[in-house]
Length: 56
Image (cartoon, rainbow, N blue to C red; front, side, top):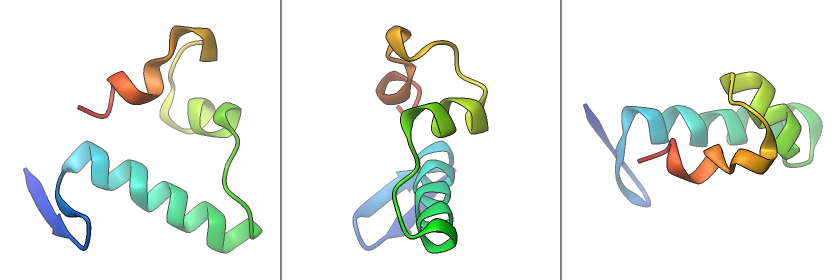
């Protein structure tokens, strides 16, 4: 599934990630930390660099 966004067409996973960034920033006024992102999406350690790879 792909979704059209102002940045182009995003996959469902990419849209979920972007929406998390938007929501968290609105709630707190700042971008989430990498630890918050890792915890939210259930990724492994930050050293594994899962953030970019899992968005494709």
